Image (tube, rainbow, N blue to C red; front, side, top):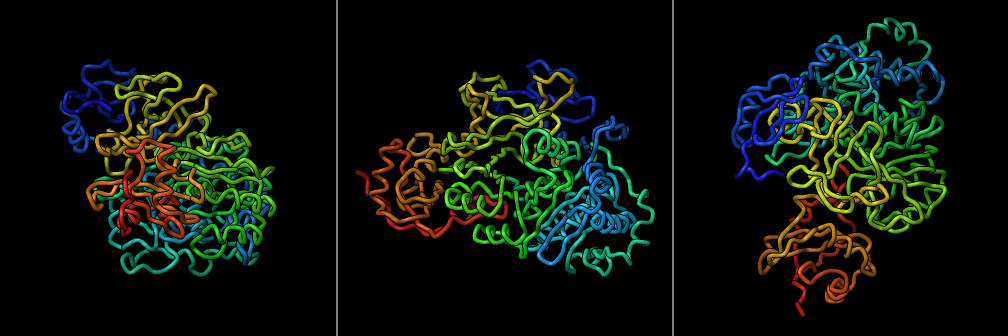
Length: 571
């Protein structure tokens, strides 16, 4: 962004006592004041780490909510309006809204007795399941924020995450030796909600608190450059804004929908996929098993009567043309996608099924922009336009707006922003900057690190990560452009590209491909017709399928250790 070697920064504070850094020689945006410390950016951020000890905004400490709803409010509205409608469905049973209300209320009260409430975080160690959904909603109803953890992660990592989040309570579906005081979700009676339970279940429902819109609803871990994960804290108002837009503006959920939960609880899009139906009167369907690969999706859709679901872009791009018509025939009306750039053919050709492509980092409450695919959609699918309440800016390195059609970094602002990184005030201050374009004084904007372009028709196009640029023989190379060209080659179903420093002969581009294998020399020659010669990979590796991580994105760490064969001879 700014040249740290040349730029002096000031620590600045807004009316909510949120901290940030700002170039000392530039006019401060309205609502921000200098705190009194100046220096290079690292010195300023270190100072913030020492002094910003309470990251809660003052508006939260005052507890004035202005009548804005929370996730708990939206769910309660559906319980009152549709008590006998299905809320959760598995192959074994169905919970109505009234039954799910009682099951989650009982667990919420147990959490309250253990100290859960506003300002606390409760861990959730559970695979995708009805029990995990019960635990999530119960945590929300206790007034706390939910921090999902993966049962398959090393215990030491999970312990570190809980400690960093200040978390002292853990919900789990199985005993955890490393956290013996964890509360089991599946203890007898927790999920039973038949008539014989009603006398006990219905008592004292008014005792559960009503969260504040600025209270954290959930916290999601993302990878950190220091080797320790960052924990993004998202308030109720951010995810509620997206859910209301999903219902009223985007047609992502209807009362008669059955939404299949396909992603792991630790992926932020899960919060949208499962909380959106429960806040809109629809039903969440949960298939057996923890994993939900593409091969099992169609069977689950048929078994559970699914009408909407999420498929990661890394899966939908290469396989959508074959999968979408079959899903449409099975009764699916909508496929939500995102998580990475959507690059594929025929994504608008399965009418009446619609593909909705969402874009947004965890720091902006799952998705900030949306695009609906049509028959005219290009293979490099746009990321669309911002949802209500979200502001988008495309800025240059000096934080100046670029013209329409020019590329720059995407900055996001408005109601969808996260509070920041829990326990990391300096990292928060570096990424959440004063917003010089906001009408509201003291507003912040988030630097995504994504390169985008605003098209004349109003849609944004994703161009790649700022840090995805690599240098080959002195040339800057965009990895996304190489991958797109690879997918244009005959026989290639999916592709990933990366720079390997350990390649024979020195740093080189490596292409990892799936599909019908063709000779490397033929592929290189074909690429030479599409992209400059310095962008053509020197090595080609063929796999049955690309490895994906838990978030449904290509696992680039796995690609970085694949064995390489001989390089392609240069003409």
